[in-house]
Structures are given as structure tokens and as C-alpha cells.
Length: 68
Image (cartoon, rainbow, N blue to C red; front, side):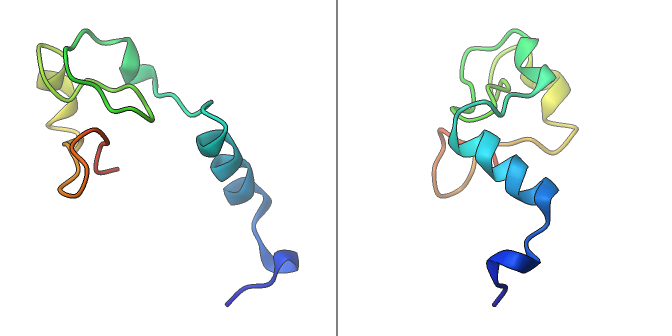
């Protein structure tokens, strides 16, 4: 287990953005009907033609979030 002194500042900043709702992907600008609630990428519709080959799919545990 890591102590607060051992945390990477970049990782801490990334989690801060995710939890504060500021983590959005540029792929979120693509058109699509069903989107990830966190990063706004399209998981269905015309935009998913671009995102699925990149590995973005709905999560098995929560279909409202992507698997990334």
C-alpha cells in the first residue's frame, strides 16, 4: 500500500479531474446516441465506428460507462 507521500502527482491530478467531472475526451465531439457518462465518447451510433476499433466499448458491469 502506498502512502500519500509516494503518490505520483500526474495520477493524482488525473483522478482529481475524473472525480470533478472535468475528464472529457476529444472523441466526445464525434456524433453518437449512447455515450459514456464520464468521458462522453460515443458507444453507439455513427461515432462508434471510430471508437470501437480503438477499444472503447460499454463496460460489462455498467453499460453507461466505457471500459477504459
